[in-house]
Image (cartoon, rainbow, N blue to C red):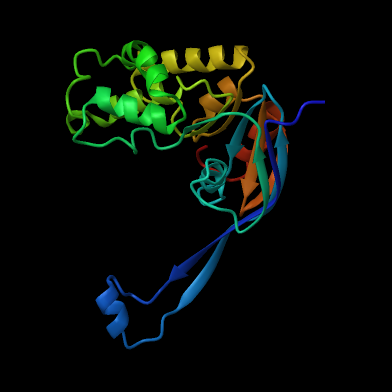
Length: 246
């Protein structure tokens, strides 16, 4: 039996918060009050497996730990304890466009971001035309990205991230990154990725997106797995649990 695409065991993540009020090193050194430190445990020991080819949605209230979990899997954070394994090339679609340099052109940012995501320079160059065409930025691609709208940045980020031959996508609130026509193009890309056997773990506050894409839902509540099962079973329970919007 093949390894699961993602395996998480007793995963915990704590953040340490300071309440000293010091906004600079000088203020901190001169601050006459004793610093007050607080530990905030976001994930409290969660375990689950995602098999290859599955599409799983993470649902839960704001602060339940959904985005923190994705950031741990993308190695943005290190876990406090527990273990996690990602078996396959990861394509993180978290904050699209966040890694772009504002003074570089869209074309230059495609090159740098593609290489950061694991492609060689030759591979990025071979895919540049398709990335630009998918993002619908043919006329703006030579302009600095500081001149782009937020929607243009997101489209370019999505186009780059989905062209790195990933086997697993982790997606945070970016299934719809443009107008209706581009949203449909994103869903078509997801369908094509899944047809090739790709695995998706995503967070969305859009009920339609969860029903449209996910086979399974993991419901996080206060840093713990509250329920895990088929979308048609878990989502209605979550929606009727006093949550005004997904």
